[in-house]
Length: 132
Image 1: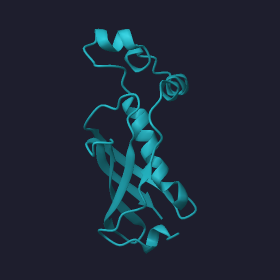
Image 2 (image 1 turned 90 degrees about the horizontal axis):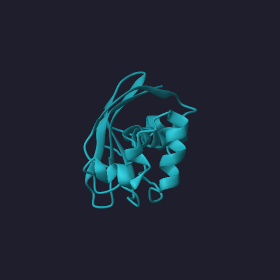
Image 3 (image 1 turned 30 degrees about the vertical axis):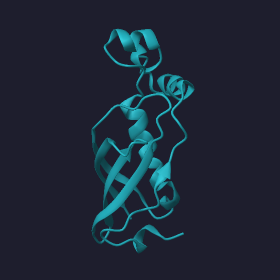
Image 4 (image 1 turned 90 degrees about the vertical axis):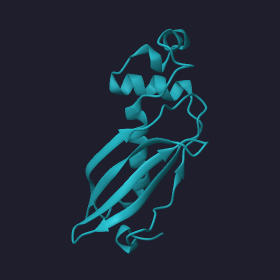
């Protein structure tokens, strides 16, 4: 495995594909986060809100995106993280997490990060600063 400092501008970290999203994932996240909005766990509530089904918490997706940096935590940590939600994540969606180096500084590596669904559509996109 490469060290994070081995990656150059334009290089991508190895992508991570998550298991299909389950209702249990979202129930566990609701309990951990305190976000009990029923559009995330109850079909009738989601449909009543005009959604085709329950959707994952945006922060569930954002939190999972940090997993791509787990192998590099001995070298540093995530200093800053700014994203935009681009699409909804539904049950059974398969999310792929990606990160590409956009800038290297003396003590920082700046990444463009994204999460895409099985149709290669962005569900989240942003920037992340990894402090060495």
